[in-house]
Length: 71
Image 1 (cartoon, rainbow, N blue to C red):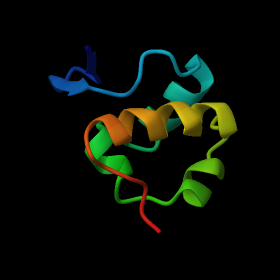
Image 2: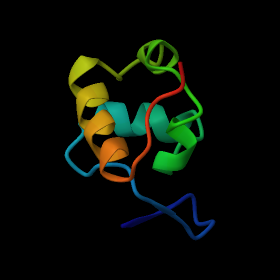
Image 3: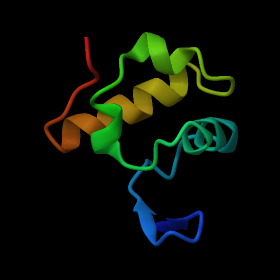
Image 4: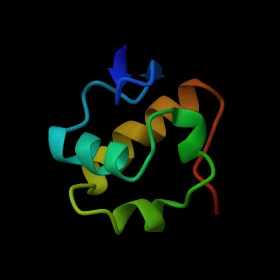
């Protein structure tokens, strides 16, 4: 896991998403999968750098934790 912004907040975002997607998510304040369960896929697609591939990987990671994107 990584530390984000020196706030000791560990990210559990998938490590296999691309760097542009990771930067976009972290820039929008998303560092935990639980946060993404409150957001729709369409909202995340609006972030520059987040595309269908990243969403698919995030969706799998959410499913592993029993979570889903918001509707």
